[in-house]
Image (tube, rainbow, N blue to C red; front, side, top):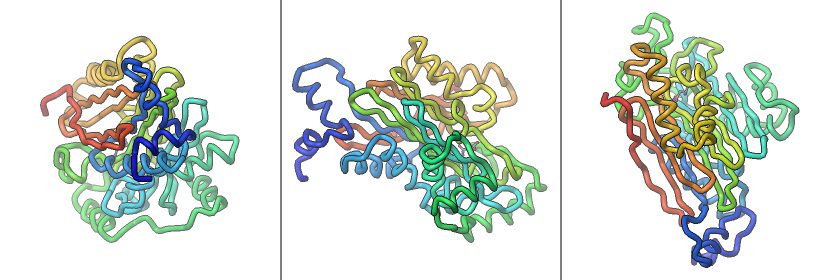
Length: 333
Ligand code: SD4
């Protein structure tokens, strides 16, 4: 299909035809398809998600396809294959996927499988549960036919061995300014949270990560926990988080963003409200710590806000145009 307008007008399943219909009738501020994801590498994920929608995929298909991009990237050290290990040298993955019809699946502390987002989807579609962890998650992945893959790459192992020498075998919170981090740099918190809405106002989201580098064995962050790393609510919106997960889980951050939207705030105001709440609650304890939220409402209007400068995110609109943006932050540094 060469002509994008023709293409958009002819596929019905993903709902992408609706914005054209809305434009044709002259409706103001029409609902639109929008894909939104954390960090600049989210641009490649968005493009893959968009292509999946163009091919007739559902929102969940698009979320899963997008999330699989950084999961397969060995140079991304916070998601999937090539992720930094826990302090014992095991790469363990956390992921969640959900839609606004109440479908949810998640895995935590999953090992030996690249696509945690797909295992999470399998939990959603093939079990009566919403979250499976650790050995059970790994076994479930094998039973569902996900190939066994050793996730620890030589560069990630080298980083871990270096850390072992210098960090006293203590877990160290990821931060934008720590030993291994530079603000906005490639080693920042690279968890991908991805949200999408379609022109009918339907919503879905996903989040996948290898979590904090050199975390304690068994540590689970915000990402796979519904309400913390991700929350999607029909008729309201969706939110996802990145950064130091403990600061998100203690306030059920993404659910709180969506609750703020439900109470009438815009997606942007809601993200700001929750970041400010975390800052007020935690005071000095969150100095130098990054937490960022993205949110989307049912009409594709977005919000993005974080504690520290350096949080970027990517948007892809219903014309397939992808852009990377910098989120505003509460603190200057
Ligand atoms: C976690 N929120 O496990 C994740 C970390 C993150 O890139 O965003 N890492 O706490």
